[in-house]
Length: 287
Image (cartoon, rainbow, N blue to C red):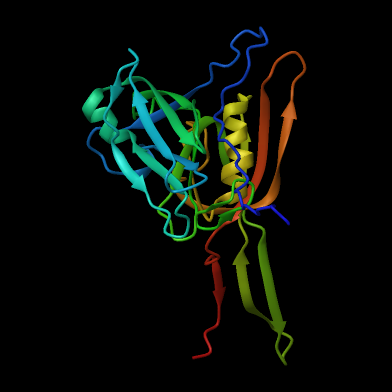
């Protein structure tokens, strides 16, 4: 008699934050991210947000996403619940730093995630954030990437399709130096006169960061640049040729490249972007 019973179990991958072991390096494991918000101005490039998500093994698993102030006291989550209509196992929250600024003021905040998944209780620190009020001085020398997500992330099996999930990363660096790469198409008429057919600026923009901690490069390379479906870049440098790079809609067109340094844990990142909407074109209308 065969007493074997077949049972099906999900393969569980327990979530991890950006926490690392301490190997004795000065400044190790204390990455703090700058976030900015304006108390009254609703301009999106002046107000950051932070998206947090977690994949459960089952909708019955328990997840708590919380924020603590500089004294370690848990404060009210302010922002928007993340909605994943095509993934009932994923939950999240999108923190609105403008609301946090107005309710609690500037200072240091920590986002923590605690969970009970498949009977295992654990947690991690999602990130530590230094909140300042937005100004030309507080934003000086920074770049901000804001991304919206609307596709399937295979590595973590998270389906962002039709979700409202957005996230921002602010870091020291530079974005700009547009190269228009004008494409010119002309025709020669019967009288040998050169006539314009079409002209189009295929713009390239260049991102060059300062040396960054891994908590920033990991977010950019492994999450934003890999998964974004709408990417908006803002630059806040005094010496930029263009002061109107404010939530500019772009797409990654050349792979990002990291430069490492011996003797420390920092890395520089470079990447090339183009316009998301290719409208910088002139042509004769036929109707």
